[in-house]
Image 1: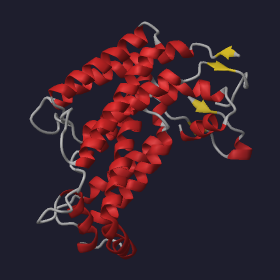
Image 2 (image 1 turned 135 degrees about the horizontal axis):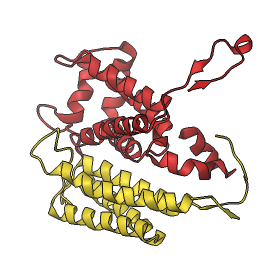
Image 3 (image 1 turned 45 degrees about the vertical axis):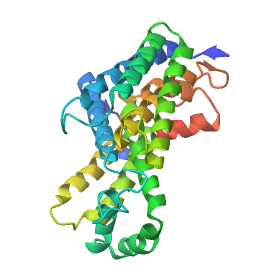
Image 4 (image 1 turned 180 degrees about the vertical axis):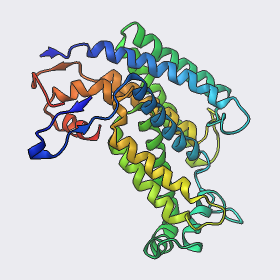
Length: 185
Length: 129
């Protein structure tokens, strides 16, 4: 299927993305798989200490230290050393909350484009922390970024997600929540 | 006030799908380790999740939105219980972990959104795509 344009005004016609039933199923599969990535990885971020009081350090505290010990990006390492580590429990709970929400919202496909962007940001935070840590496969983190960019680009929650169920209702309402949800979905 | 065409049916089907998804997700807590084990839950947690999943299924199938909302509220209560107990570092009634918190949060958000979504519109007869 082609989207027709006036070539003189906008250039050659642009071929639309595939919109078949199979494509929609595959988009949903990718969204749910990415959701499970976050869900599964919340399990090793264990409150209330998040590995801080262990000797040697373990869990989230150990992986946060890697951002300083194996510096990827100097300003990030400075931020981790001088801001994150002195307030570790606060940042650990924020990480726990953000990653739990990423898993939750991507799983049900609600406000998916917003959460896909959050996923990109969180993936970069992880990249800046552990990209140079020994034995890490850097492509894994680049693939995380790519997967979230794809979820954003195709508005993945509209394929078998709550965004697809609720957007018709949001389109017919004028309030701020409906407008925000239209943008976020 | 106008009813948004077909929305109630779609919301009920979504509640059924979420209930079925919640029950099916328990399969990912059975295996010994990843990739087939993606979260942990004790016997009490499994029973609670099955009851809440059944409530979502029944509420959606029988068009009983209060039951869908109750199921969503139940999942939300499970999230709060697990987070509070984890922060105190003691009892773990549901036998869960951070992954079960995230999973329950997803079903709580989903079912509460479906159950509480307005099905009427008073302002925009047509809208942007």
